[in-house]
Image 1: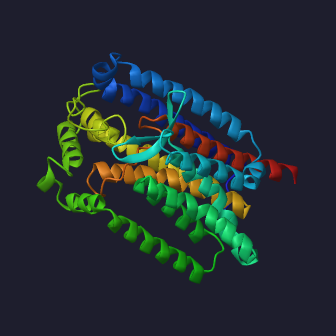
Image 2 (image 1 turned 90 degrees about the vertical axis):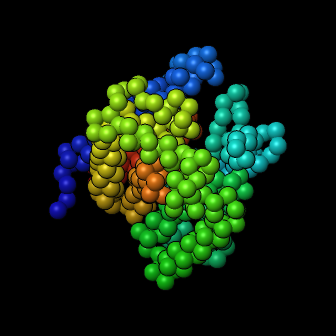
Image 3 (image 1 turned 60 degrees about the horizontal axis):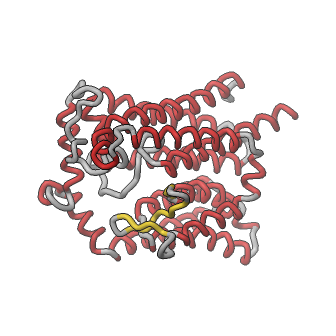
Length: 371
């Protein structure tokens, strides 16, 4: 049974409001989890707060601009968007331009601002991949190879940085698009098992990833080394109990829990807002994903459906993976919590993706209203 136009518009508003609510909640939690760190290192307790507010303002501008672009324009220029992001990705590997943190060169510095192009790649690939998989049988060999190279090359660059977390999430997104598309099941399974094989090979290629996997199996055995973050995360959730310690009253952010305002901000939520806060965040992401998929299913164009569903999947699965990591259900991967964690590239790219989603919505229903 088709949804009414009023219900569709309601779902669209709910998707936007949930993303805005999560972003504003993120600003609050970033301040709570970082003001002591900011005061200690930057002599300004509001350092991270002010930056995140600027990122939210910039991201809102990107969302408004993108949502008002024609979806057909975005898809038509998906190759050029990917080429631009790939070029910036390459710059991260050039000494003097790329910024290396903890052995990973994932950022470039422009006018004192760090940009992580891998965050934007997640969604540019979602714009590009549907054209390859949906039209695979109708493309000649040359076009197939061009699209395949456009998808695989940036993934290789991610591994060179290295950024296994972004590599994993991009690979999952591509497999998801392939699964939903008209690609034959034989070719889909070939894509699936090839991706799994490459991922396992990449995982085993670096000793530190194997050590991280071993520590994940028993973090308490390596509580002072590889399992340190996860153990401190466990302690945060244990301290939070049901109702939490109260906003701003957490202890793990006092230089015990690394990346408290970033990858492990969900642990701070657990400590300060307790099980109630954790459930509220989980339900917010579940509702965002549910309403997003319900909207995507209303889009009659196959390409529009695939891009929209891919965007919601990427945001939802990254949230699930981040929460699983801090709960010790997955090995640490360096993935942040969408809309909530600190970071300009992450927040702006998430809002850019949401703008693409709303552009797809407008394109679909403007077309239907003209018929």
